[in-house]
Length: 147
Image (cartoon, rainbow, N blue to C red):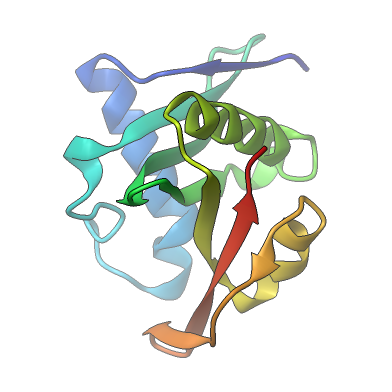
């Protein structure tokens, strides 16, 4: 499988982009539709991974400026049938490169506690204390210095 990274452009692109975010990040926890979006959507850079063979959107992520010099990526989601196949890694590489091009000196995310080891393997360090996100889900700020 070849993974292609694109920027969503059309209404249909964004519909599929947000639907994947909802299916992976909100629906399993009983969250209502539209909770997959936040106030930062208009000022974010959006990226989607596609399976070249099918054209299907299989992963998504967004990036925006948290504070001067600090990029924040969020809503990293990979279709469950494509997990553990390099899709998340490809999206992270894309976000890191976009952050560098934007002049950010560090890149971070709010990671669910069960995914911190994934990000630690990619150079991110826990930089805060866990906080409640929704229900019993807890998240923690993780950050990586960019060179």
